[in-house]
Image (cartoon, rainbow, N blue to C red; front, side):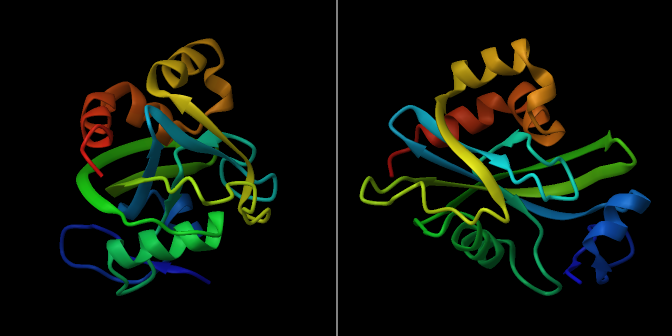
Length: 175
């Protein structure tokens, strides 16, 4: 059981990740955006994921464990999901809520970006977490989201629709 920090008024407490998504409890999350040139690394979530399986999302998205910092969670999950790390820099926070089937996304997301190291093998990902990876520019992502919105996670669509300027600005920073 993974415990996460709900970002609720009145204090933080531990809650199971699935329970937070079932009960629509506001909680902490992290999202990572790794870039190479003008392209963003996106991942298709593994078919075994209980939530948004087989859908495309940003490089990594996850939840901190109880009393784990978002920064530590971001580095840990990048390694656990993709099998490598790069230096990550925080660039903002996105708060959003969305219903996804019988589950709810109600998250306070700490965002991080990193620059890809060309010596890394992107094909060495954890297949229990990731089904595929792809490099796309933000205009290409927006075009695909417009043409095939059902192939993307709700949170990634929210990020790219409502926050793509903040994300684009962060990703253009010198590494």
